[in-house]
Image (tube, rainbow, N blue to C red; front, side, top):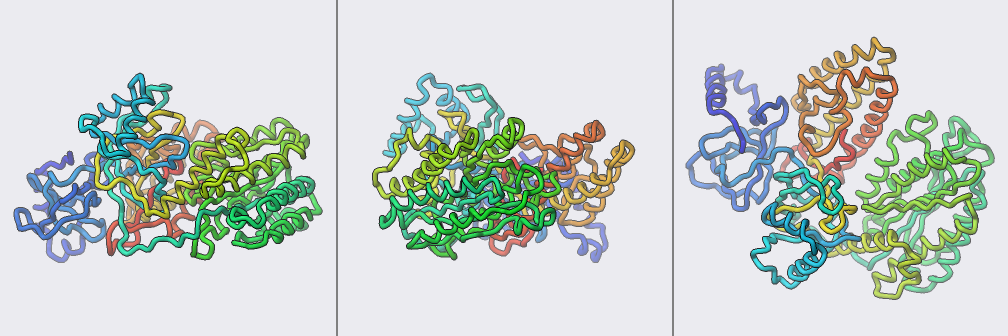
Length: 638
């Protein structure tokens, strides 16, 4: 329930009425604040059929779309004055019983269902719990899914909808599945933390949207080679393994549907100019009838650097980042590649963002998240040669495991002692498994058994096919429903089924980026204990200046480093900045360095998103650019 005292509203209206007309005209109407907040406005979502009125008790002028987010500008008994934009002011009245309160602007996104069952949405939280806590859970779930498929679900089961059988990527096609309420609980199968969420859903349909061109399921694979001196024999082994696979599929339909590109990386050329390049696209990903050019490019990559690079670790993240961002996965805007895979091959770890020779200031987690949102899976073949040593191998493996996640699987392959035969066999298995994805999509028998392939690669193939089918069929989230669903898969808490995301506007992300940028500047200047003590005073000054910009909605009375971003409070996640008090900041230089490093990585990612028009969506025709929205993952919030 939205709570605003009538006395406060009446007092505000009286003050405005007493203003001279020119002054009142200069003060644009702003939505009502959430109780206890300085910079968070009240919002509601329309129920299906919600009518809009020019005035209370007037005749209706039409209806809003279902679950249209609206700002609340005023209220009377049983009515809300609403508008779609912060900047344009109120536009209509709606009856209070035709809208629902939307407190935190969080939305739910289905993960790719590969490797788990379709999830079911229930009318009540108790009905969801009844299934999750049933002693014959899996049998009951199978029965329920069979009933859903045959449209024979008994009404007393309380089922309101089921997850689509294919994958709907919320980044490619925004759908609104707002989270109306949630309960933080323990999953009954393993007692780990889990969210039970009440969600609503309606797809954002684009009228007249054409279906993407479809010439059949295919795969684009980009190799990312470390071409420093120690890698020469392994590149030759890769060429041999790929050549064998290409020879096996040459002249077949499968062979025509697996295409390759090659990217190389070394290190900072400013530190060692003889390295010639930090990253280089040796061969772009394209559809080719003849793969001999691919094999020749891999063979030529054995012309490795003639000098040592600075330090043992290399700038592999720069190579992967370029392979993900610079590769044309859409094939020139025509039929996009359906399976999208980057294979990193290196004997060194990635440079840490604190390394002065690292190019990018985003880490493995940010690179992985950006890749997954593009439907790109990253695999890492890590050669644990004797030169690295146990401690270095442990560091590299940890970073590459984080980089090589896709959904709930990890595609990291460590080659002990850098054994050349084991490495070549792994390359052959991975590339053959990718060609088997094509065979399976064409209802042909795979070359490898499930045991030979490995469950993670089986899941990846299924995930890529489900994403392909979702794009081809124009699949959308369940239409106009409300129900309760579990964050983690009902039958397997190791798999995330629903990912909570924050629906941020471009102005809100710009505010986050602006704040992080200024905090970084101040933080880098705070060297000694006295500077650290003055840091929070300077932060408050920065926030006060930001508050003068109407597009920068910040809380000027925060007691934590991130509290100025008041719209991040009360979310079901722990924010590093929200937890950083003045005492914690002053505790140690190491604490401060970790906080600043985290801010820097996220700032780089925010700036990339702000400059990418493809990730932003208007919620209604004519929406101001600053109010376009993006469903932002929790794990990259500040």
